[in-house]
Length: 332
Image 1 (cartoon, helix red, strand yellow):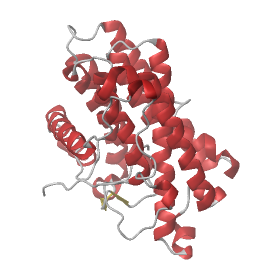
Image 2 (cartoon, rainbow, N blue to C red):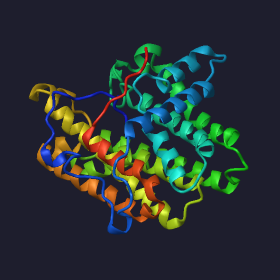
Image 3 (tube, rainbow, N blue to C red):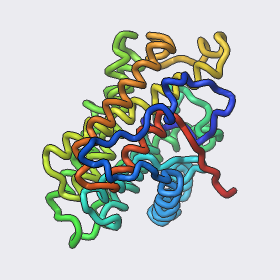
Image 4 (tube, rainbow, N blue to C red):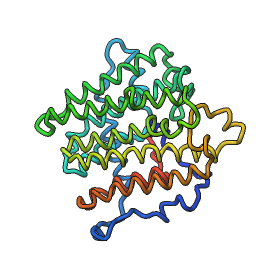
């Protein structure tokens, strides 16, 4: 649901100048003026993404019955996946002094849960999307029955992967329980499932609820899980929660703006089934909303500037969500 679009560049689209990363630099307070504002997010993200891809491949070997595992792998290992939820989880964990090895199992679980939600979202009874990341949706390849089973299987596999692969010498069991509880909350009837239902059945003025639950929850959960793994304080968890939620919604609002700018009026009317800020309020107000979300996310990070340059990846994620300043190319 959140971070769901494939990694592509948008060279033909125009984003208002007020949206440009060159005009909204990484914000550092006077107390942290020694922090360098230059950070190579693409290299950082690409390196982590390669590690996560390898671990996901190892986490879902093909077993009997083969069809279910092939369907699961088709979506989880899809080319073009950014791995935004796991990357955010690992980054938040390392920011607060956690070990990357402690974060990888939860990071993989987040991607499994994310993929499961996308499989179910794409079904004809839900968003009815025929393609995902430039390829046919899971149900178009494996059938609706197998797609439902694959999504159902990925949710518990994620939880099992956390429990069976997280080094107990790095993360106490009590912290792991909080991580599992956080993921269950995010995907459940008060989280992403609620957002999907209201998107399908609720009134148009429920767009804020839909955006927060359907898209903000995954970003929120990813950041919070990283903090929990590192033993973050309650105040730090609250900041990560608000930060991740803002980034998740920001990413989707910008997606909607870019799509609106790239489609004709007829195509836009035909495409829009769900609720978006652009669809309800128009592009101009959606751009203002995106700017507000960007500022909100960066304000939450001011409480982490005591950690020095470790906070820069999280600042950079905000700018990427708004600007889409680079794309990834997978080897075929």
